[in-house]
Image 1 (cartoon, rainbow, N blue to C red):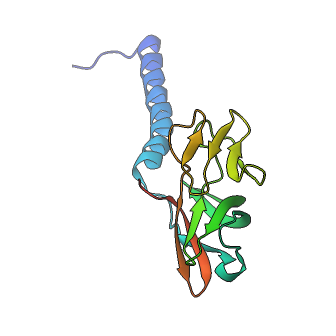
Image 2: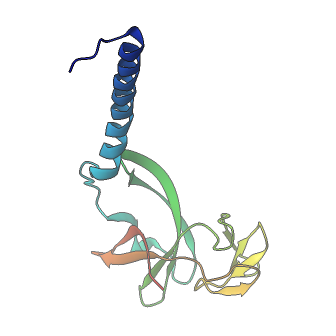
Length: 160
């Protein structure tokens, strides 16, 4: 049994079809974003940052280097830093450049022979441990290794 189509039923059906098309147009990119992995992330995990022989033993050096960071689909070439401390036995520790309290940039203070965060006066020892202040934990360390006399660091932090 066929009903006569009125103008009102035509407009209701047209609006429903347009609503379905708009919903599909919005849902498809959202689903693709959530379900499809980003394209290949061909960045090397370790980056050469310094020659170990040129680092003074027992004295921190702030090393500036460039790294490629991939965040989802965005690939960024950025300049960053790390504090590097070479031990007497040529072991090397690379610290992340931000305080563990609120993320402020800290520096080495020659007078007190410690790292000092100027935001809330947290003091860290040469090994990264907290000497005083509100920081809840020692300085974060990058995963690092020495290969052929060159210090290689990862963007990953060591798990404590």
